[in-house]
Length: 281
Image 1: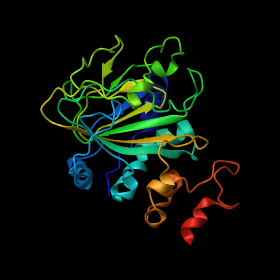
Image 2 (image 1 turned 90 degrees about the vertical axis):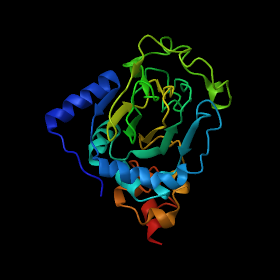
Image 3 (image 1 turned 45 degrees about the vertical axis):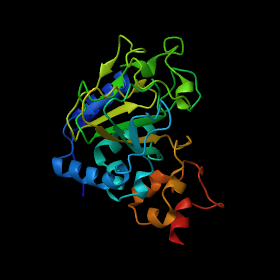
């Protein structure tokens, strides 16, 4: 069982205000080392194959492990952890869904990722209401040199004119020179989010951010569960990524996040009935 982390109502309100105003909030040292070690061990079999990204966005010198809730029960504990869920449910409502849940391992020599918004697939003009919350759990410390996530503070409030030039849809398909200048698209507002292992960063889904360049001699591993409003389409089709035989073994809240739930009044039904009934078969 992963360790809990409680905060006072005043701490929550201050952090939630920062999340909505600045686009991010950080809690350092949430998970003790034993939990970090357990998460790393659960990922080890899937990172061992050294499967690299397919394009500039995934990272040609990065490993990505998708569909984590199908791979080990510990990841269901992570996505339902009380601390981030308090923020997620305030921002998105209790009918929220898990949009993505993956591990990202930046290898030495990886270049900076293109700028993007995690809810960029929701085509509403910017600035748009928050329809997603992304979380970043550090398995390795994020440092100045090893590819710490970079953000543009407050950019979730920018209109399309101010964000012009940031999005590069070609990066989802292209394979550039891995030695290209990592700072070619750096903005003066850029802030590197350094923090110890076991820490948690939350961002609004429409905050502009990117993985940094790894100029160190060691990998940088994080796990990033991402949540969306109950009316939005998740990035990963969770009811296929996590087979029903596995889903029915998970805690009820994890099942709801996978899509075995209803967004009021009846969005998400299956053959006219609640989707959770399909797990009772």
